[in-house]
Length: 234
Image 1 (cartoon, rainbow, N blue to C red):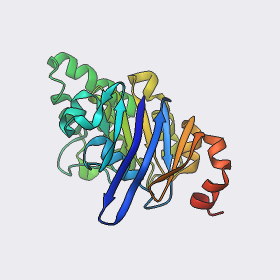
Image 2 (image 1 turned 60 degrees about the vertical axis):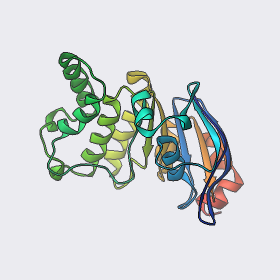
Image 3 (image 1 turned 90 degrees about the vertical axis):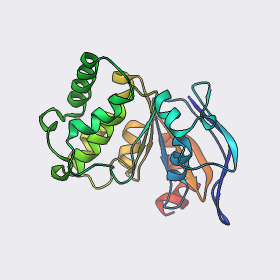
């Protein structure tokens, strides 16, 4: 569970998040909104890259804002980025081992986790392929595998479906939907792909100009007139 209370972030005279309060409990929660709505700012606050002017975030009974970014990662917060953070000359396996290094597990356990996340993401055959040779979908999957290797409690995914084909998005949909069952982690999903959000998010929040304009069951949210006007074009 993530409880957000009166969260405010300002960049100069612009309020990227404006007194945002939200309680997320489901296995996969969607966050949508037009460009500039504050979605990535929220992810950056949760992961420690942006410090809010005010507000509180309680995740699984822990004060998230009291932790430094590296402490949040060790506690169990993992994230992906809008632009996949892949090193061109390092292999898929290398990227995943970075997350394993922070776990301080015996080598046998490292190999077990490595094999598990490679199999889950369908990357086993590509484990020794360098980043420069990965296509868009493989880069996205490598980021997700890295997240899962860190034994996360919460996974924040920032537009993982960007640039993917319909078939690749279908694979991503199945994978994200299985994370809670397979790894026990809650997922917060930001994406512009309405079909992806509808398929796997039981509840969805909608931001516009830093404010929460709707939150609830996903289908009900998409029928909301404010959401139609702000996000779907009227």
